[in-house]
Amino acid sequence: MEILTYNTISFLFLYFFVSVLCQNGSDISPISSPSAFGVSTQRLIFKDRRLAVVYPIIQAFKGTITEDPLNRTGNWVGGDICNYTGFYCDNPPDNLSAIALAGIDFNGFLLGASTLEGFIDKLPDLAIFHANSNKFAGSVPDVSQLKYFYELDLSNNVYAGTFPMTVIGVKDLSFLDIRFNLFSGSVPPEIFNQALEVLFINNNDFTAKLPENFGSTPVRYLTLANNKLTGSIPRSIGNLNMTLIEVLLLNNKLTGCLPYEVGFLKELKLFDVEDNLLTGPLPCSLSCLDKIELLNLANNLFYWEVPEELCALVNLENLTLSGNYFTKVGPVCRKLIKNGVLDMTQNCVPDLPHQRSLLECTEFYLKYIRFCPYPETYKIIPCKDDYHHHWEGSKAKTKKAPVSYKTLSRHKF
Image 1: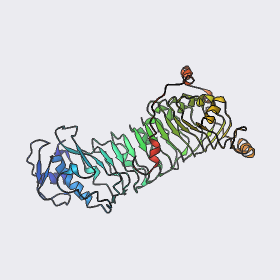
Image 2: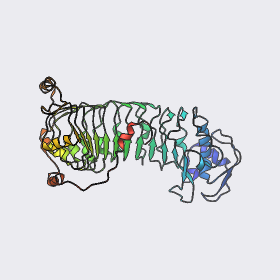
Image 3: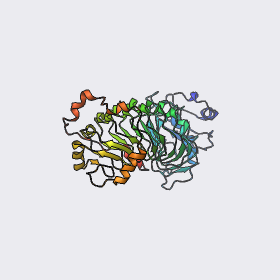
Image 4: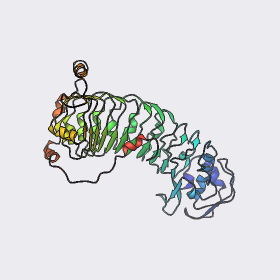
């Protein structure tokens, strides 16, 4: 990357005044000049001309910080930028002998600033920016011109307004975390057209329906919990069959039936839709979730019987169906109840303890039962040819704790 490729007058002005002794990107550069960013400098030594370029940007941002209770900016002085607290350097892909500012980690710094615009969007080699648990606000910067950028974490700050459209079209963005802010309105369909691996937007105030292209991104970890999302879970979720590992949709206002296509998610380990308004019988396709470990459908409006094939899944560690209107469980499911794997409290199974009253169950079945579209799919087991392996048991495996539940805490994980 050549310094003359920067388009702004500010960078051209800076370049004109910088006196550089080095002949390649990795030599030592002294700088003694006024700055286009209004930062006065003494004669400083930088390990690379790229660091000389970002120095006044960092110092200008430092001047906008209104809160720094932990004095994290205390050593942001001098030319040794790579040793500033929270700043990380590396060799950029376009010149492995150069040294550039590649990552920033402000997690837990408790910094306050009215905006990040003019800061991270002006750092040409930046690839990662993490800033969980600060007090940043304003508009989310447009980092689409940063050619190496791929991770953005602005969780647990004080951002507000609609979904930050500036993240749409960031070419290589694979990690987006904006949970625990004050965003509202709809979630734009465009975000699901991006090649994200991680999308955490929980604990905001998003409303409206999930878009039909919900399953168009190859996401692995998806958390939309604790918002006010409405409508049904799109059938396109089945398109995530090769990638989706964990999904949290709990505590929204989702309605409709579980789509048959959920059963296609062969990599899925965690699926949580607790505290919604979902209804219908459980599709037998759920018995194809070979890798599922935690399945939480509690506090919805599901009814009829619990599929025995679902209870036979060998990796299942926790199946929570409490707070629904199921009327029947078979012997395989009863074994899970006995072993503490299956929670069936507050349903309508006559011979189980801690069930709803007969009056409450009768009223639901007379007044509130809703039938699902595509009813013919609810008894289909798409993996039936491989069905025998559900019943044969499996060898002990080492299992990792779910990642997504940690996103329900405000702080970094």
